[in-house]
Image (cartoon, rainbow, N blue to C red):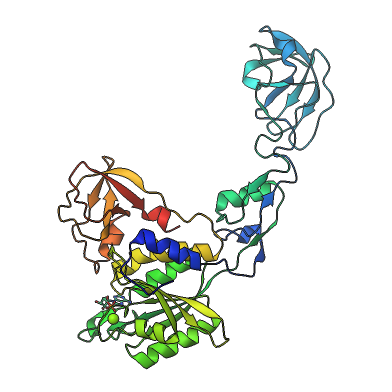
Length: 413
Ligand code: AMP
Ligand code: MG
């Protein structure tokens, strides 16, 4: 990649993802432990689900041809609870059957017990005509033997775990977790708990980015080494990056990546490796940086991503850029996020020349309300809001316009 320039997000993202080769070293884990992990294998069914045709009702298994007329009377010759299997059914016979029990040979339909009348002498009257196939769950209607039910690169959620278990898999092969070193820069930063609010020195602020960045990395399957706060000094920054590169796949920093004299991240990365991207045409989040920090072993390097210090900029650039990157490191094939067309119930007359991500909330009328303060330092906007409007550069918004909405709920999972 070439030297950085102010790029569009649409240009930057493919460049970034091209660098995110899937990490080597997959792992076999219990299916119980696989929630949130990424499949490193194709999952192929070795059996049909359901294994046999079975009843979806409590009632009577019958041959539909015997029950073409309402009021047919059949002999009940067997009883088939779930977990057992029946004998072949002869003409004029019915089997008492329960939900999940296999349909016996010779039967092709089930009548629910509410549509029958049990008679004396082990007989049953079927009150309604019965179409063939009624209340029968077909073998293989969920999964057919030999079918690929889950693709490599799928991020597992509870539904996938259940599906894998339904075809007998107690273990799954998943991708390695990215090892991420996280550090914050800024001499003004104080850790909550270290200094009480009433004792905060002038100019100090609490380190908030560290809390949400760590939580988001963990949600995305990363193993986080939290290296705390690094002082705004060139030597300290170089030392922290050099050390972190050895044992990690990615170094993620917040702050210190702008153009001020106190911003040491960019020169330090250039000194230790290369900076491939710097500054994007997005708001918030312009100072975002991507590069590589070399390891001691020649030819080896660690990915570097530098997020702006302003909390909302950090939050948004994480979701736009770090999220797809760490998913791609785990082999996830599709990292796109849904952009839903929604109605703006607000005006945004001052269009920016950068693509903007405005914090909004869905209202009960099916539209979007705007948080009044869109400053990149106001983290309240991300708590009040339940997502952002992805607004193209130079585009003003008037009440009633259709805009593209991204939900935090989807973005953060
Ligand atoms: P910087 O990107 O270092 O120039 O920081 C931009 C703004 O974000 C400054 O007002 C910083 O005080 C603030 N900031 C930087 N890092 C953090 C952090 N970890 N938590 C909260 N605010 C921060
Ligand atoms: Mg700073």
